[in-house]
Image (cartoon, rainbow over the protein chains, first blue to last red):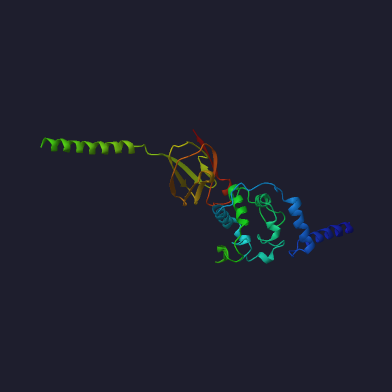
Length: 156
Length: 121
C-alpha cells in the first residue's frame, strides 16, 4: 500500500515538474517546430482567396488590431507586450522564419484552430473568414519591428 | 406687334414645356428603404432579397454596440455607432448569393455575425 502511494506521488511529481515555465531547450524547440510544420498544422495547400492589395493589407491590420495585438503587439513582433518573456513556449515573432515558412493555408489553420498547448487560441467564430484571410495577407507584410508603438491597452 | 406677341407666346410655351419635361424625367419613385437591425451577434433579418439594378437605401440600425455590414464582393460597407442608425444608397449590379459580415469588431461572436443577400433578376 505504501509503495503504491509512493508510486502515485512520484508520477504526480514528474508531471508537475513538466509544468515549469522555463524556456524550452534547443532540441525541444526544433522538434516541436518540425512537428508543427509537417504533422500538426494542416491546410497546407489552401490558397488565400483574397487578393494581396493595399486595401486587404489595411483590412488585415485592422482585424489584427482588434484581436491579436494583446500578445503579438501592433507590429506582430511582440513590441510592448509586457508578459512576452514570461511565457513558455514563448510568443514567437510573426516575422520569424518559423512563422513565415508556413503556407497561407497553414497560417489560416493556425488562426482558426490555435496551437495547443501554447497560449495561441483559435479565432474561428470570433473573427470572420474574410478577416482571418486578410490577417494572413497582413502577416506577409508586417511593419518594421517597433514602428507601431505599444498596444493602447498597455499604455494606461 | 402681332409678331412680338407670337414670339412671346412661343418663348413662354417653350419655357413651360422644358420645365414640365424636366419634371417628368426627374420624377422617379424614391428608392425603397431596407431596414436591418444589428445586435450582438446577429442581423435581423438574416437574409434579404433584392432585385438587380433596383436602387434601395440600406438602413442599418444598432440596438447595442457599434456594428458594420460589409459585402466585399459588392464593394458595400456601412458602419453604425452604438445605438445609432446609418444609411447608404445601394444598387446591386450582379446577381447571386452574397454573405456580408459585421465589419466592426463587436465581441466573441463577431465572426459568425452574417447576413445573406440574394440578388435576383
